[in-house]
Image (tube, rainbow, N blue to C red; front, side, top):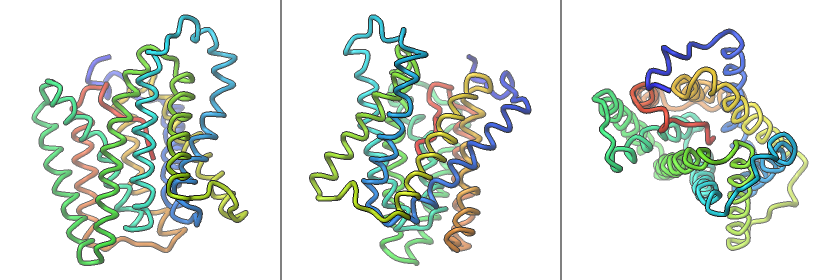
Length: 304
């Protein structure tokens, strides 16, 4: 696959429709999560545990042949991706209740910037457009943090956690890309999500956070989050990435920022400070430049 995935993989009407569904799914994820009263570790645990359980039948039936000759070392990258994914959720989910949903989503979508920087550290030469995108996104993040500083220190801390979640998501993406060189998607997903759920369960045990005993409202919200984020979001984007390419998918994921802002306005009555909107726009533009100029290997599936 060439780096010019936009030109070579122009989406058809079916792909556009599927990506629209996926964007709606991931746009609902953040605002719905902010509505849950259950601990964030519990939300992340159940989302990943159910996601792994949903993919297990696919692995054991349709893709069972991919397990033949599989070695333990082939699963290491999947397990590492699971660890990074657990760190992502542990950092990002609390930020949704500390800063505005729109700011949190805008900052957590900077994942392609961190994967591009990781590529540079490993010796890959980055095009000038990537560096311009990096500068614009950093300026945007600084604007968001600057505005939140006038709101409260808690909001700034939420911004920091969202950025930390983006860094962890970068590790998840890179480890996942390596894992899927050897594994079928179902095998990778089952291992990654299972490890993530296990780590989150252990973390909940250590800090004394319950994983059950919630209200019916919270259970319905957790089920809805799992459905819209895992099935409508992750699954649909993974379905179309082979036909439209990772560049277009990654650009489509950026629509989560305005999508989440609209959903948060409707469901939560939450509007970010007006001065933060230019910062959010700058983050989206900067990340879009990075995505458009980066190698497909460094692009993302949604971790949100």
